[in-house]
Image (cartoon, rainbow, N blue to C red; front, side, top):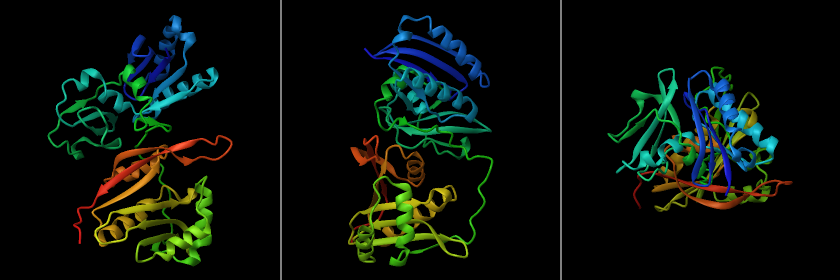
Length: 353
């Protein structure tokens, strides 16, 4: 039976537990929004007294969303502990562990929302199906700006340790990066003269450089030329450029044959040093508009499961997860493992021609 050390510091409660299969062997918590570091140390000292502490085989940690200071305490400890023991450390969406608790689900007969305190008069929130499966990506907002649709709301609960462990095998709940969500106080300077236009063959040198920078399995020149050969009949491709030299800093492409057929996003790519400036959003807007113009009923895409910023962008724009393709993407050597692809869909409301 696998023994897990469970840690969550995403809320005002610091939680630690030892879980063996479906049984909580020991658990403890401390309430205090500003004392996660001190509290976690005391809780781990208590956990050491348990016989199963020496046989821990994995660490499961809540990845938020949560305030930066408290959340990083738990994640930093979990990763350090796992590294020292040479065991896996699995991050899980903390809101999912509130929604998926047995006591919470027992009363649900419809979709529902989970909210936790984000401070600054804001909340972290997500929408769930009545079986506990999350429908939307976690988000942060003023509470009066969230439309709860007169559905039930689980308010300011705490992650359940046993549920955190169960979710450590569910791809939709696993996260590799903390969910801080709130924008940093430091703001990136705006790019000078940002412009979007249709891609052409003269852009392919810059496009290939970005492609190689971002992806372990980049497209080659022949593939891009083949895509552009389909413009405008079945393809739409755009670039984002900036500065006096009109440097290409991002690109995007769409497959949409028209005639009422669905559209597929082929790629949205922004050079790493220019990310965080809203370029991805601008390119996505162009692709959605192109799909609408071609009367596509829906638009689809696939994204690496661990590409959390991209998944959050798509969710914010109305895309929902509909399936997962296991081991779809090849990762670079030396690991040579594969990543899952999350399939997402946005209904456009178009009618068939």
